[in-house]
Image (cartoon, rainbow, N blue to C red; front, side, top):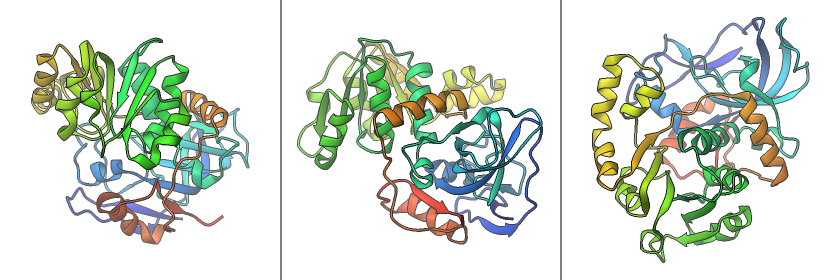
Length: 335
């Protein structure tokens, strides 16, 4: 089979498409014929070596973290899946391997695909869905009656986070462009701020949680609206000491992350708040819950219309890194 592989970490890395053996599933694995693989900013972090302190790889490594596909074989201990089942997954980080015609996936990372979605749209769900789920439930520990603000939440992350937050009983505020207002409000947001017309930090106060999708340039505004004891969860700004502690990293990695996240921790502490960073993991059970939310809310993730095949992988990566995709960028495989 063909696979797109990384040979070395490099700030200007390119993947190489080559023939590799088709994997044989172990007792707890499912062999999936990949129909679509999503290309995410996470690939840039992995390829450049930016996250090798969190997850290092033996080279060459087949890249790709998010897939939809068809079950082609099952291991001896697999009872929940049969040949022909439509499935999707955020692949386990130690393995990844989605930029390939076939991938062997631990059954614990898989879930049946949402019945309301085709393979293309399904491939855009797992990573953002699990990020929203783990962020709200685990990193924030949000409770009914509390409030959350998502700056820049009018895109694919907000599509998943807003209905999940509403299901939990949270009041949700979002900022984004004017064109997205109607769709965001239909998902259950209470407040929407057109970033070109109004500043959310001048309208909101005493918010329990902020989920940051924009990065360091927005941090001061996010802290400004938090109540004492509130928390900012970032998808963009990077790990800190708490992240290292939660992931039980070695003492020297803990020291490095403590240093890297020191300014974020210090700024948050100055307003009596807490800073957290999330690096989402695979979880099939959580993905099943996300599937239910997708089906109930008729969520259809935005996907970029550009058609890429595996031989176009570096063009797809460039669009994610440097372009303006109109949704999730996908690699399409033959049926």
